[in-house]
Length: 232
Image (cartoon, rainbow, N blue to C red; front, side):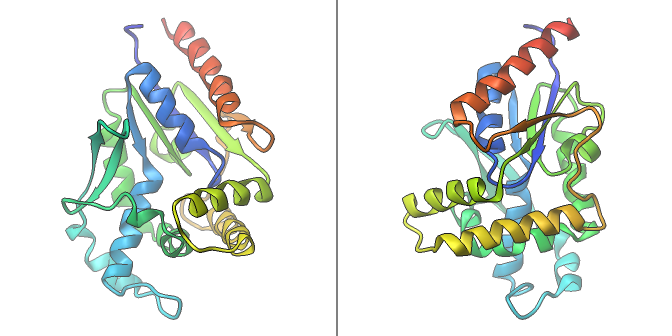
């Protein structure tokens, strides 16, 4: 199909939205942007610069260094998706740790961080033909997106997925630790003052608690096809 649309996939962490968004983009030949990876990269930067720890969060220090944060995605042919780069270095694996997960929601509450990343995200989607997932894509980044999906799942289902992902990668974590992290992130994302995680009025909700990734993908792909047909 020659017509291109913008697809915004929002929702809580570990609902499968990034995995589904990647597959949708690949299926359509669209650009995939993992906005969550961008916030994770900034969080990794903050950790490396000692701006954030379990005992301290130097927000002013991080804000003062934001101009020195260069983010980008580079497609990895072997993996089949674009990896996150921070100031020219591949940080895809480094940003998926529990340490980054424990701080990313706090970093994402900073208005200056959100403002800078939203601008970059909007530039990436100027020509449409983009699938972007995150927390505020349908409400803030692309409020005029032709298709908006909002994904949810139970805390237990999300924690189980995240736990398996970390264990398979070789990380040493406890399920309860992951569950508590999921609940904490959901609370922070939903209650932050700047761009809280909200379902756009025209977004279609999908509960992936009892769905496989394949079933979730097929559900979203069906909505994509319908939207493309309507946009012709």
